[in-house]
Image (tube, rainbow, N blue to C red; front, side, top):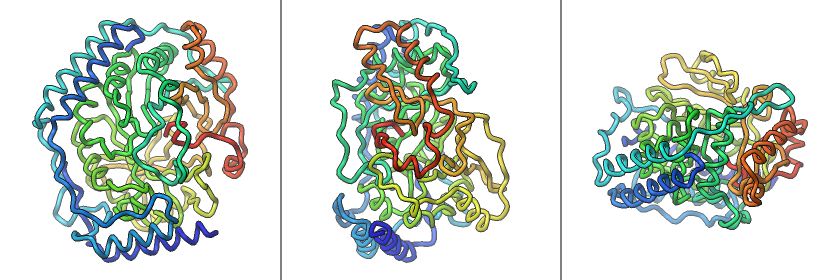
Length: 471
């Protein structure tokens, strides 16, 4: 109850800051398992990193008052947010997501002309091509079917447990015990395992974390995976904080899709939720990603009562002129994230609030394996969607598996059961033994919610913190 009152006070403080802000703001423009292939991919990463260092950094933003301490209560953070709004030398950017009348979204920037940009793209592309020619096609094995007839074609790989934000619904306030680096998967190990999954019919891979972009060889990982024959989609989920400077290298290495996590359009509230600054950089990166030619760019928003539910309509506005998917996610319980039903906002409530503001919404036909229920505001370029894991789960069509940064296979996000593929590999296991281990784990998968009845039972169950699972 104290936490909820703190959240309410903090939200009131931020709301006051929003009322004092301008009515709108314009968004800114902005392998295979062989050793030879792994070495080529690693060279790509080193080359991209060295050229990226030469890029001119963005102009520094205006200095702002110090943020509240990371362990401050929600009320204290809210007070700090209000103080920031009062003393900020520039108007607080209000995130209504609608450009001023007569103004279009920023035009796409010209092709990379920053120092080293072209060289980085060429080097990564050449290395990825070398990786592909050096490796062999994945060995084909039977599809990964569970006992409910679901075929698994989507693998999410966490590249690291580390993150440069401290989001309250993901990271406990006192942090988490991170896996020692020697116990996390190496790039060749990731590529070997991914090759086995692709050989069993996986066509889509998404890289997660932690924050995947804090991994030093992230471009090498992307280049290696993009070279796998049979893989048709390679995406990444990122908090966007450092995405801007990685975009050219990631695009050249073969990344095809991006999900950016952003839970507020108000800078002061961003600090409340993440315990860090940098919201402007995330928005800049989002627009740059839209202009960079990725097949898909999505914005993920975790909605929490008393924190950001009042911004749902503002996020919808971002889809007016941008081919962006904005996805509202029901708040989910994980280890250490202080989940409570009082903070939970069901998707039906969000949908009703949006329809009340925008009028009738168009229902969009979803893919059979979609985790999201998609809608479109008539006349908008982008879409909105709802990931209703708690109130209307999509487990019946689940085709997803997860590989954690320390090499554990989780067949369900909400299940506590896992098996260490890292230990099988480092114990000398063959590809056939690894494949058999994976297949056995998939056959043990529960039908829904990791075998739990509902969100309340999930909240009482023992599971990893989200940051060590992979978002």
